[in-house]
Length: 93
Length: 187
Ligand SMILES: [Zn+2]
Image (cartoon, rainbow over all chains, first blue to last red; front, side, top):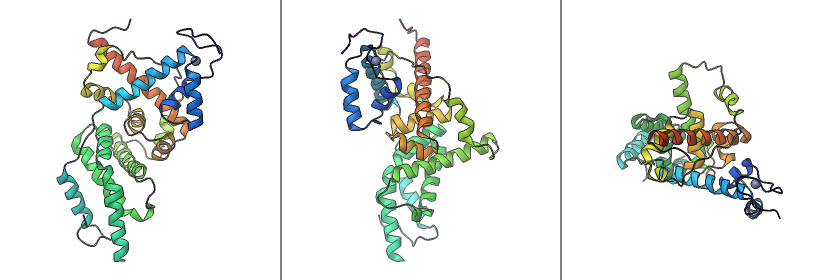
């Protein structure tokens, strides 16, 4: 257990930038994730970084535009598939 | 034979078509053009139908379709840039992944970022080189795992991670530049 000093790693901190990114990307196992969340609380530098990286990911996810195809695009796609060799006519749905 | 056909149609309708909008979003950000993006989606589904027998029912249809679309885009990109086919695209780019392990910070608490329109963030994303944009789209927008991204792009997980790290840094820098243009300077 160490002292929290803002802007610097706790002397016992085992977190790395890589581990922080793996945690926000859900790339750690459940056990590793639990351990990370416990450990990150002990280091002001890493907990701050973790929160900022998480916010950035959420920011991107909420701001980047999602596109939607029109129903007519899907119908015409099915029609084209229906005319492909190996297909027997109309699409079922 | 008819039964096979029905099963294939079922896979197509139930496992492939639900990803159409996600594929369109991916294609749109790669091509930054709605018409080209729709062509890429159509090409992806035509190929998926042609090769449906090599797809195993109930496996990862979304990753399989994204891989087809990404390859279709890269082929088109190569043709346009007249890059020789003998040069492996990913090998060529791998060099650029090895640099920059620094950590770039962005103060999202500043309201300028919260007020940023999706269009502005989309533009910053679309200005990234295609290989960096791809990992952001796959990971942060579509939620693919490192393993899935590795299979879609065809590069090792370590490269995925370093590329993602760099891509995020580049995007933060671009957004910061954008904010600076709007009169916000980091304290
Ligand atoms: Zn730390």
